Length: 462
Ligand SMILES: *[C@@H]1O[C@H](CO)[C@@H](O)[C@H](O)[C@H]1NC(C)=O
Ligand SMILES: *[C@@H]1O[C@H](CO)[C@@H](O)[C@H](O)[C@H]1NC(C)=O
Ligand SMILES: *[C@@H]1O[C@H](CO)[C@@H](O)[C@H](O)[C@H]1NC(C)=O
Ligand SMILES: *[C@@H]1O[C@H](CO)[C@@H](O)[C@H](O)[C@H]1NC(C)=O
Image 1: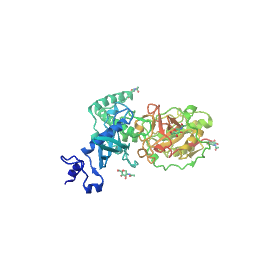
Image 2 (image 1 turned 135 degrees about the vertical axis):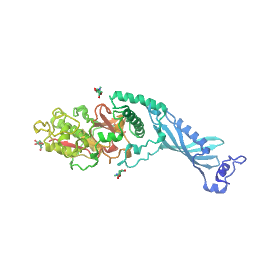
Image 3 (image 1 turned 90 degrees about the vertical axis):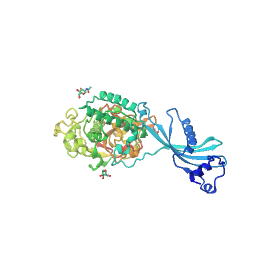
Image 4 (image 1 turned 135 degrees about the horizontal axis):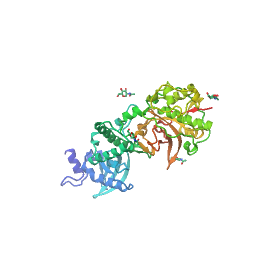
C-alpha cells in the first residue's frame, strides 16, 4: 500500500476501511507525520485557532498561517500534535493596520484530542517567532527587515498614503525640485511607513514609530547626514574613570526640573551630535558647580577642535580635551551655530566657562543613575536604530537590532524614572523640538538598550 493510502486507511478515511487497528509497522513508529499542506489537520487546527482567539482580549482575531503535525491513535480517539503559525495584527493605528506587513507571527504548539468527531484542546503554547536577525554591525535596516515583492501594497493603502504624504509635506514645509523628485520622495516615504511598522512590531517598549520629519529620507541619507560614524572607532582620548558616588540612586530624577538643562537645540544637516552632547554636559556641570545655566557654543567645537571632524563626526573624549586646551567655551550667543565648519574664531577673552578634566563613567546602569542624580546630565553614545521614525514613548528595540557594537549617535541623558512600571532614560537629542517628545527620546533603562551604557562620560569643573 502506498504511504498516503495507508494514512487514509489508518484514519478510517478510505471508503470501506474500518477505523481499525493500525498495521504493526505504523504502530512501531507510534505516530504519522504530515508535511503541509495536509487537509487532515485543518479540522483540529481550526478548532485550536478558535480556542486561541476565545482566550485573548478583544481585538482583531489571529488567523492561521502554516500547519504541520502528527497524529497518534489512542484508545480515546486521535491525538493531534500540531505546530502552527498564527498571524496577528500588531498595529493600533487603523491606517497602518491596512499594511500587509504590520502583522506579528506567533509559533504555537497545540495538542488536540478528537473523539467521535468532537475536539478537545489539551495543551496550547504560543510565543512570538524569533526574528531572524544576527549581528548588525555591517547591515542596514533594509537588509534586516527586507521588503519582499509580496509585500506590495493594496490600492486603498496607496491612495491613503498619498494623502498622508501631502500632510507630511505641509506639516514639515517640504519643497521638491521637480515632479520626479516628489514621486521619488513619495516612494521613499511609503517604504519608510512600512519600515516604521516593522520596527514597531519588533519593539518591546511603549514607543510609537511612524511619520517624522525624516520620513522622506532613505536610511542611507539619514545615516550620512545626521549620524556619526566616528563613534564606532572608540579610539578617542583615554579618560580616567570617575569616582563612584556612594548613595543608591533615587527612584527617579529629572535635571530639567532643576534648571540644569538648556532648551533642545538643532544640529541641522550636519553630523555634529558629539558637539551637542558635550556642550549639554558642560552646561550641566557649569550650572551645578557655578550656579549659572549658560547655553554653550557647538560651533566653537566644529571650527576649533581639530581632532574631531565637525559635521563628519567626532568623539566626546576628544571634545573635552579640545575645550581644555583651547581654554574654555564661548556661549551660543557669542559663537553661534552655523551647521558647517568655518575658520576657528575662538577668543579666550570671550570664553565664559572652563573645564578642568573629563571622566569615563561606569557601564553599570544603576551606577550611572546614581552618578547622574548627584553630579548632573551625562554624555552618552547610542545606537540610533529606529530613531528616524520615533514619535514618542519608551523605545526598547530587540537587542540584535540595536547592538551596542554599532554606536552612531551622541546624546545627553538628563534623567530617569518609570512610566507605568517601564523604566526609562530621558534623553535630550539635538534634532529640534519637532522630533520625538518635544525633542526628547525615551529609551528603556536596565537592559543596556542600544548601548546606552558603553560610552558614558562627563566633563569635570573644579
Ligand atoms: C561589510 O560589508 C562589505 C560589503 O558587503 C564588506 O566588504 C566588508 O568586509 C564587511 N565588513 C565587515 C566588518 O563585515
Ligand atoms: C517654508 O519654506 C519656504 C521655502 O523654503 C520658506 O520661505 C517659508 O518661510 C517656510 N515656512 C515655514 C512656516 O517654515
Ligand atoms: C580649573 O581650571 C581653571 C581654568 O583653567 C583654573 O583657573 C582652575 O585653577 C582649575 N582648578 C583646579 C582645581 O585645578
Ligand atoms: C520601575 O519598574 C521596574 C520594572 O517594572 C521595577 O522593578 C521598579 O521597582 C520600578 N521602580 C519604581 C521606582 O517604581
